[in-house]
Image (tube, rainbow, N blue to C red; front, side):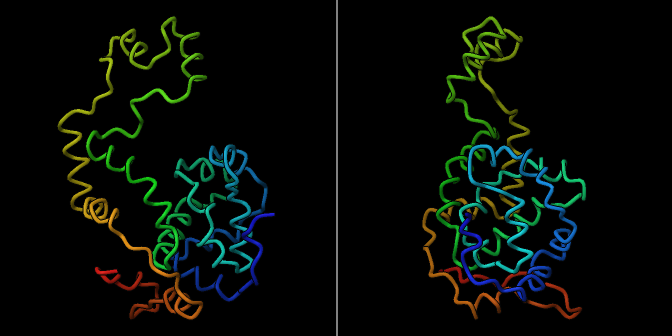
Length: 228
């Protein structure tokens, strides 16, 4: 049984979360619990991640356990769930907003820090894949199908490509420019020194969920203390 169902349900939070996700979470009302999202999810095949279970838990109002759960950090936004959903539910967007809420509420920083080496490598090289060969089963399968040693370098060479994956200088400069102007570079520099903070109390969490602009719409999260 998932830990997402362990705590007391709070149905009133479902309405609040509608604002938190800019009303995208309203899509979850259309969920039929058919399970196509889970069946097509790479993360679900190797972890306990279960998008259908998360949707069900959110609809029951069990929001706090969702934003502090480990499951929330298993998604890598491949959008297979979105592509296979017969109701066209944009679940990856909901996951992104839930993670934002999780971090602001004081959860999740440990999971984010684990991804720092990959993010830094992407900034330095522009590559979203590792150069090292990590899976011997894939290497053996490649060798069988390509008449090479199975290493990606040998496969690339046989295809007439450079042995090493390399992003052009122009493309890399664009990646770094986007990272710089979006604030991601600043986050990457500060993340190793980010202090864990105690999770918000239930009352603080309730207040955090609702920042309303003059039109009565969700207006984003309060600014964080730079010294936090």
